[in-house]
Length: 370
Image 1 (cartoon, rainbow, N blue to C red):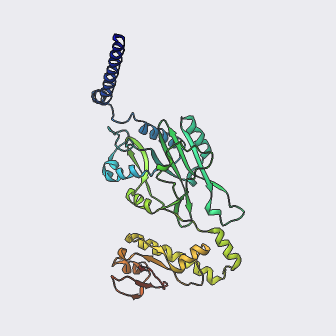
Image 2 (cartoon, rainbow, N blue to C red; image 1 turned 120 degrees about the vertical axis):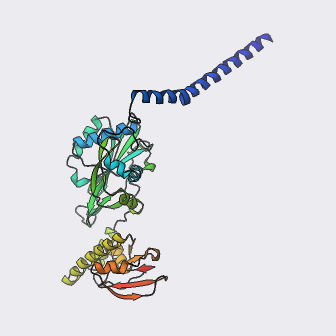
Image 3 (cartoon, rainbow, N blue to C red; image 1 turned 135 degrees about the vertical axis):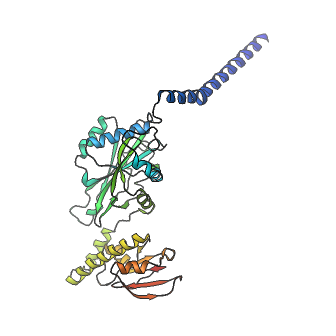
């Protein structure tokens, strides 16, 4: 009996000692180490946060792109939002002057940069040098949608995304391609069979879940956390574009099938109308954009895009729609200043249906259509 009691007592002592040891480790980790670390940082005058994995990864990536003359620019939504809130501070910062890492050290899984592909002259050597610097990179390619309407070139693949990891942080390089209309487009990041799904948390990517289109941004160089980077000159405009950037590609195969059944009108008059209609669309889009009014293709103009990837030559008009809540009293004067005077106006504001017909523009419909 005494033997059993001794074993029980020994077990209790062992359990108690283990619990006390775990408590000491927890206390040291969450209290003493943090306190002593902060005191050590202040006493040595070190820069706060600059030893973190995120900042070091971004710094190495910027060094890589700068050495290869690859003009990447920052598009990370979280960091751009912080920059926009502290824009004056960022503009006045000088290289290497930061005493605290306020932007690139914000916790996140990725840092997103972008590149205009036509400016990338040495893609293969860049990829090789990145791996020599310790990055693990994965390249994502897909068919070039700009060539889908050309049978002999359809299927040509282009780079869409790069994801490079260093230690525990990843850099997402979004490759922008030029599209007719003077805008930038990026493709859908599709995980093919050979891709390791655990390489990075792909579901947390801000770009690549669907194709996107953006205005070509004007760039400026700034110093962020002691690093010189390019950013959109108007960060807020770029951020506002992201939620509405989803791009729907034209149905080229269906369009070819349509023209095999119904011959395309290539008369001089039809070609002249297509040209003027596109110019009118660009002018209307530019005018509405200045007013901050969202719009969509409507009626025959939308049908032409959906059915045959173009303008229906016999429609003789351009149809756009806007929401009634987005209507502004200066829309008519803005169009008039753009060279599109008001010809007819149907209905009164506010009503459920408003039809405004401009010079060379008629038959518009929608909650409020121009």
